[in-house]
Image (cartoon, rainbow, N blue to C red; front, side):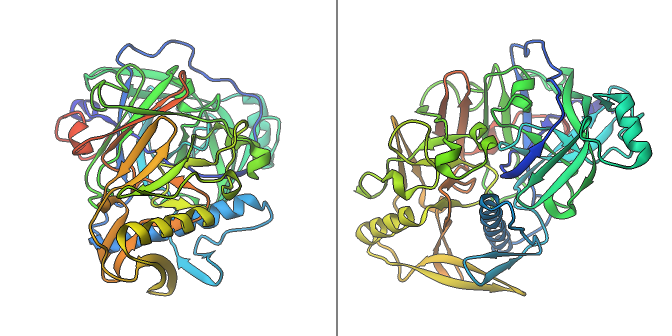
Length: 464
């Protein structure tokens, strides 16, 4: 028990689009300030214990990316449903998916008594609600206290959904129903993994949910958006950072920090490049109102080997800001591959033709019963230069291996068409710092993100 309690806590970051949300009034449970050293966590890849080959990891990542695209498309049309067993994408093509598109998982310890209730969860930068389906009973459970106990008991007795003390939340790939309340979670503070702090968090206990909206091993979601009920806001911090290890070496751990040491622990205070986090206009972007709490940056140009697209036009982006004349890119650590709006993708193809001497063609990839599409070069490129995303005040250089894969189908891109977003393949071995006070996203490349994970005793799992 002592060894287990000395382990670093694990967390996951993932983004998912909601179609609707109804929540009874509930307030954040944490009012005290975060400790000076902040909180530290550890990210675990969803494929970490699957013993998959590199080819299998790439195919699973492609499946998740296409399912994610289908879920984003469903978010545009509330009447459109997504079959998570065969998610339709790119016209008649489909992907056989038996898991959700989320990429990382976390383990939580709920309750202040021993033994605690253990749950695996995914964290969601597009949600501000923390919820679990791991509790056998939502009422009378020492790990969870409903906001309105008497109402919860009445609803539970008659087996009906009472909107006065229950919540209903609909995601692109499913929905959940349950009770809001508070739960106690123990977490590591500062750099010393032996120091723990019990934190009371506003959360929800799910009683009904769509089975395949989560990875098989997960039992809930932790919200990390800018919304008032997110873990970020409840911990009382204004910044957090993470550094994602190579997604094709899924056994490697990735660090995440909240608060005091979010910058220094993520690679020191020097060498960061910063660009503003921009507010989105849900009306102009055709996304729900809740999407304003996600993280967006303006994308000016795309360059390779000194050849650039020229200024990208706002009308070619689906995501648009509340003010200004530029288009937006969603910073999405939960999705696998980068996506570019169709006309932005065409601009990228033109840059690749000029800089690399290759054309980008679409290949149909068949695996089992499923079909998917990959964007590949028609011949061997000249050189292996970085891809550069030009943001206001900062350029992000993406190494060749983070956007091109040479495999059985030739040279293919880790880039798909869709609503513009920066996926985790392009973020690996990059420290990402979100500063909510200054409204900035900062980033810096590191040699190996796993080297930043705090050393700890020999433990087979991690807890929050």
